[in-house]
Length: 345
Image (cartoon, rainbow, N blue to C red):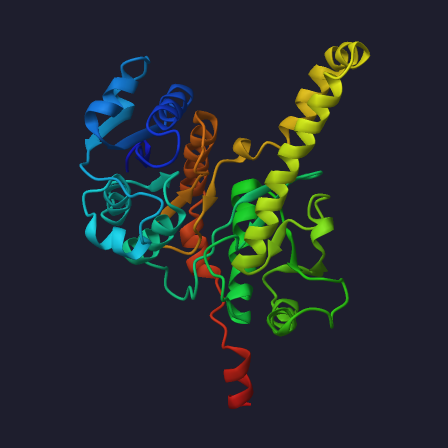
């Protein structure tokens, strides 16, 4: 067994590639001697960035690729035709067992398609959800799904809950995590058809700690550890939280700079404020793993910085050490759809 967790990094994906992506890789290996990063991308450009840093050469490898996948491209077409792109080559390295995980800030659609088509889902997994950690008053919660399955079915949400519970317990370290499903009210009879059909499946599941419905306003307060929803609602929640956090920070800064008194007060509270706001910095928690695959795929923001890249790499180490894929495959329920269950009754 390799002494390293080997992470394939799409060096050309994202708005800040390759500079911030490469810097994140260097920062990661300089902090962790048990990490090796394989940088996939234009060798000349990647090496130009690497030339400005000191690092253990045994922990960084550059693999030259000749193509890049652009955000506006069709994900399916790009994965099929751009075989020598940095993203496809990185994902293929996981499929071939050369790497333990892949991290990319590139096209979300291409990352999702590439992960599911090239690596494939684990046995019994119906849909692979994208699951980021979102900051809350109590720490973090897992939002699952936030972008992979817009047209999910009730049995998919049940599996999302199970996968999310396994992740939160073994990666984040929360024993018996609380699971809730996003709804427009806390009453059991509230919601659309999807939520109403998923609720009894979650309620009857013995492998999760299901606490019922959760309203969006209770998510930032840490109302549950695993927030279950389909991708459309999940993505809206995620983007709203990110936008609101930036807006609040901007308003606070402008308020402090609007007068002499504000500037003096700002200097006094700056250290405490900086520490408090740190817990709401999503980049501290890495990226969003695509759970339920035979290998690990982690999507980071398109404008990811070196810090987010570094933490995503560390996230991969914990994922491997805790054998999350194996735990999901061993503990996942393969439910019948409510319609099929009624037909067989």
